[in-house]
Length: 76
Ligand SMILES: [Zn+2]
Image 1 (cartoon, rainbow, N blue to C red):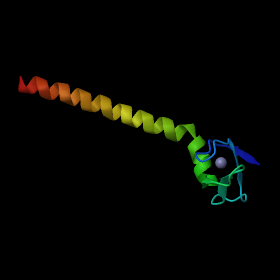
Image 2 (cartoon, rainbow, N blue to C red):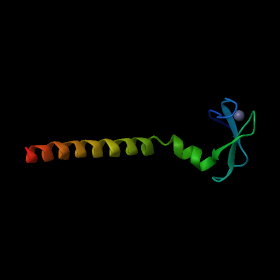
Image 3 (tube, rainbow, N blue to C red):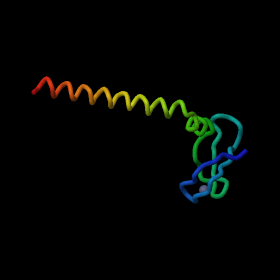
Image 4 (tube, protein in one colour):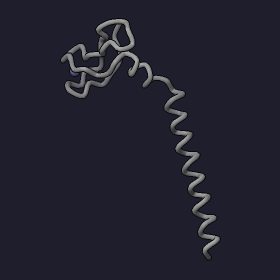
């Protein structure tokens, strides 16, 4: 099985795993550069984690913005 990647060393776009376990390594099929473990690669695909992080930071930005406006109104 191959995994789509962007190799930072040679620009190749395929990696293969050294085995089927979570901690097995994904290496570029062209230059053998190490990229990640299988579980790291699978985690990077999970949309829920990325979106959750994005939503959390957006919520925090809105909260800070509101507090900043409220604080300026108190001062003036
Ligand atoms: Zn490579």
